[in-house]
Image (cartoon, rainbow, N blue to C red; front, side, top):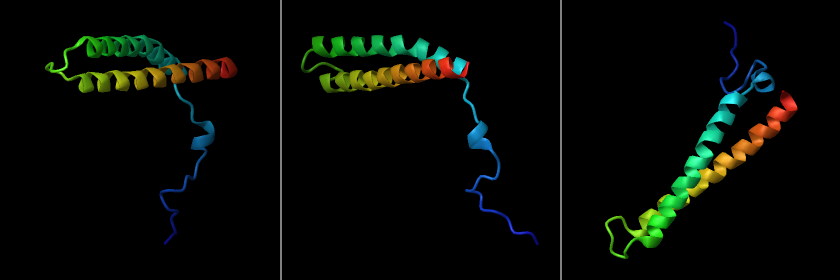
Length: 90
C-alpha cells in the first residue's frame, strides 16, 4: 500500500496560481457601497427621529445602522483593493 499525505497539506500549486474574479468583485462593491451607505443613513435618521418607546427601539435601529456602516466600510475597502489590484494585474 502506498502512504497518502494528510488532507491538510496541499500538493499542487493552488495558492500560487489561484485568482479571484476581479470584475465581479468590482461590480459587487460598486453596487453595494452606495446601497449600504444609504441604508446606514436611513437607519441612523430613523433612530434619531423615533420616539423613545417606539415599536422598533432606538437601540435596534442604531444596531442596524452600525451593522450597515460596517458593511459599507468593508465594501469600500474591497473596492479600493480591487481597483489597486486591477491596475497592477491588467
